[in-house]
Length: 167
View 1: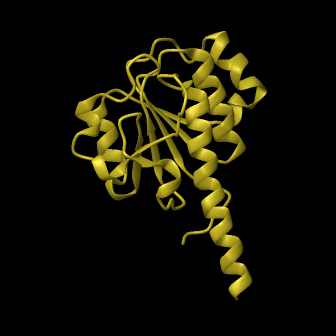
View 2: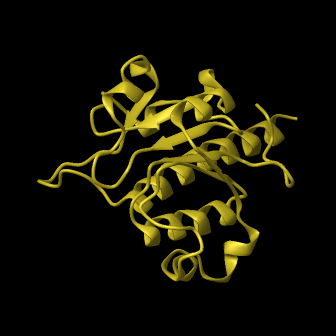
């Protein structure tokens, strides 16, 4: 188990073609809170210098570690394929049923289309979903990313705490 350490991203949050600036701003703020890196795959439905993005990120946007890539193929070359989790309503396993590790990649789709089948199809065992028991078809992107990021952090922080108790 790699420890969560300052100076390195605790996790990598990937937004595949995000469309709503406020969601990206909120996700950026969550990334700053847990020292995660935010990756964005183009095209985006907005510009990063828009006021709506920065307003949602508040004054924390300046502390965000962010990188934008032009294509999904380029993103694939940067990610660790064994440590990537794809959040989709089409997954069988819940996001709490996997074991996250520091540095993992959490991938989220666009607000209107989610992750396309072409992104998910060869990675079924790495697809996870958030539970929904009501008539809702999907959750807000910033909520989903927050839930995923904080569950990964919770697991890793708990593992570090347990490890410290053993020694």
